[in-house]
Structure formats: C-alpha cells, structure tokens
Length: 595
Image 1 (cartoon, rainbow, N blue to C red):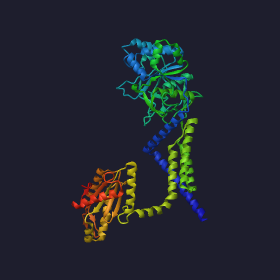
Image 2: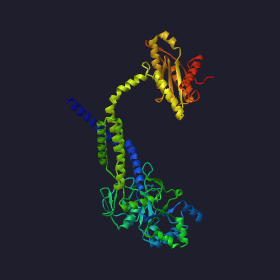
Image 3: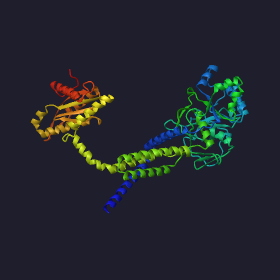
Image 4: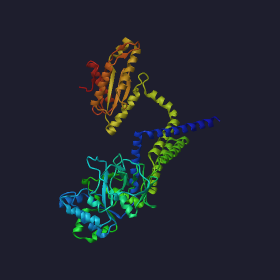
C-alpha cells in the first residue's frame, strides 16, 4: 500500500512538472524577445528542410529565364556602352522570341519613364507590347513620401477583381506610393503586376506577397497576374486565409497574408538563357535557336551581381530576384505552396513529445538509455517534419516540440537523480576543499596543475600560476593569536575569489601560502591579475577575532607555462623563486622574473 502511494505521488509530481513546463512555454510565448528568438530558430530549421527536399524535386521545364547575367552585362557595355540599354533592343528581342510563339514573355524589369533622347526606341517597345498580348510588364509599390514622388493614380484596368473576401492592412501588402510604368506603355496593356519582395528579419526571403493594397484597391503580384490569365480567372475569392483562383488552384497564406514559397533547388533551378546569346542569334537570324522558346513561359530579369538584384532564400545565399517570381508561378501551377500548421497543433505535438520523454525517464533506470531515447525521439521527429514538408507541404514546428521535450527531460531527470547525487557531490566537495578558507586544497591543486600541463602539451593552451604568501604571518600569529590568523586567512581567500575568474582555480597551497591557477592566461595578463590581488589585500581592512581592524600585505610570485617550465614542479619552483625575491625586496609586491 505504501509503495503504491509513493508511486502515485511520484506520478503526480511529474504531472505537475509537465504542467509547469507548458505554463512556462505559454509565458515565454508572450515574451517578445523570446518569440523573436524562437521564430529565428524556426525559420532556420525551415531553411534546412527546404534545402534537403529541394534536391528531390523537379522544377517546371516550361519555365525559362532570359538572364542579363555578368557576361551579358559586359557584352552590353562593350557593344552599346551603357546600362540600361535602348528600349529598341527589348522590342527587337520580343519580336524575335515571338517567332516561336511562347506562352508568355514576362519582364522582371521596370520601364518607368520615357527616354526623351531616344523617343523612337520607346515607340518600338510600345508597339511590340501592343502587338503581343502575352507580354507582361512590372511595377512596384513603396512608401515614399509624396514630397519625394507624388503617388500616382493607377489605371482601373490594373486593379484586381475580388468577388468575395478581403485582406487586413499590414506592412507586407499595404503601400502609400507606387512606381508605375510609363503611361504610354500602360495605355496599351493591362498585363502589369507588382514585383515587390520582402525579406524576413534575418535577410532571407521565404514568402511572396500575392496581393497588394494601394489607395484602397487591390493589385496583383506579377506572377499572380500571369497565372490568372493562364487559367482564365477574372475574379478571385479570399476565404479562410486562402486565395481561390478556381477549384483546383488555391494559394494558402500565412499570418502575414503572404504565400510561403516551396523551393525547387538553389540558383539556376530554371533554364537560364544569357541575353547576349539571344542578341547574337537575332543578328544571325538563327531560327533554329529561337525554337527553344516555343510554348514556354519566359521571364526576363537581371542575374548579374553588379546589377544588385541578388537575394538570399532558404536554398541559396545568392539567387537572382527573378527566380522568386518563377518559383511563385511554379508553386501555383503545382499547388505546391507550404502550409504552416497552427500554433494549437504545434502545442499538442509538444505535449505528446513531452509525455513520451517524461514517461521514458520514469520507467528507465539507465541514464544512457534515457539519453539515447531522447536523441532518437528528436531525430525521428526531425525526419517526420521533413517528410511532412516533402510529401504534404506542411511546415510543422520544431522549436516548441524540441524545447518542451528537452526541458521535460532535464527537469524530470533532475528530479529523479539529483537527490541521489547530492551526497556524492557533498563528499567530493569536502575531499577537494580546504575546510578553513573554502578554497581548493593542495591535493586538488596538484591535480589541476597536471591537467593544465597536459592541455598545454596537447593543445598549446597557456596558463599561469601565481603563488601568494601573507607577509610576516608567523609574527602576526604570535602577536594577535591563531584565531585572528584564521580570520585573516579566510578574508584573504575571499579577496582571491573575488579577484579571479570563475575559470581560475584558487587554492590553499599550505599554511599561509595560497595559489591561483590562471587558465588561458599569459605572463602579462597574469601579472595584471597578481597586482590586482596584491592591491586589493593592501587596501583591505582585516577584522580580527576581537574586532580590531588591521592592514595585511602579501608577496606574490608569477610563473607561466612554456616560458618558465613545462612540468608542474618547474612552474611551482619558478613561482616560488619569484615569491622569495619579492620577500627579499621588501615584500608587498609582485615578481614575475628571476634575474
């Protein structure tokens, strides 16, 4: 009966631990700093998963990019002398590619203002855009003050038609100004969309905004405009934080009302065709070459690093901005966007993992087995999260389940084993600590000297030793008594602890002698510490057993491994010689060199 009561009480305690953990998690979830930290880790875990699964996916072969790459930029500067190039060149390229009847030609470039010095080139581009209904142009939105640029009124034909639903204003979709394309171009086409992209706080782009809000009206992302025309969609519906193009193509949104992109690879996932090659083929009227554009969706954009349109995404640190838009289009076609599971679902998963881990710790005697179980559980969960993203496009949380499982393991383990180890720790402390000063004892000092010498020989880790002797201590004991002498020893020990780092090892070497092993410390740094200790003792008023206050001084010798020896005894002997010189020279000082 007593055993069953004890077992029941144990389970109640561990249940309270789990409840406490999730209360803590709830409180931390409300903390903005912790939330930012957790979001950063979660985003990094998303990047890792995307990088892994991207190798097992294939991008749409009917999407290609006409790339203004580094070679093209050099070609243009050599042949034409400047960038941007004449719009006549773009017009000629459109006419050349259109020979192969591509599905679309989509410009991830901004044609903002008329070129008054080259009016004929502008006319050529306008005529080419007017001639072909499958040419798409770009604009973008920003928040420039009207005093910088007067916010334009956009043509009604560019507005996105929404038959049902709406989006709440936020920094990712709502803007107060726009960079519209030149009026002559917008007058001949309504195939225009925005190419805005926004980075997360860590500078990586994981999301793309499908719909923008400007002056109370909605406008489409460039690729959304393309895909709407592809599927003959005139109006969209917004419902349950999703954009419905039709029954088959749905764009899920996250809590920022952006779409989370699902990547198909690193840089150059899609076929890149350098623009200079197209210009050369055009000059030679190479009709065989132009056939590679037949029935393809062609994006035109800059990929040259010198043209500053390079982004960082989960699968690559350097990727052309145009590939964001090709990936968005590919995701819509494949219904392949990432869907983030709800916080409630992550919370339930976390509870399940915590209960599993807590139960294992309770039922398993072996510490090694519990650690292995925890590691296997976390690895298995990571594999599940990759599988969910790879096969179901689900982003399930890593941070909250991992954090809760690890915290549950630690707290349960501590509750189970801490009391058992308490007696051992107390015995060990007594074995290595001097009873009077509470510094480490001589035995521990010798062990640590050997350990630090071994570290120096293996890794080259320098350390120093300062040896301390209280001046005239025997005379002091004769004058004030041994009880007062003990008081001084204790107070000097406290000064040593206060003026050394946690990584340093302060010891009672014997009698009135003390020592500090200064880890990762060279001779110059050791002398600074020794002088600081010496000064602290000199300036301190020591309280004796009878309440008197007196001054005490110390002499200090310093030695450093490598410079003054490579064996424990050599280091100790050198510091002892320095200490002897300090005493011979009048005490109350630091000596670090033997002349």
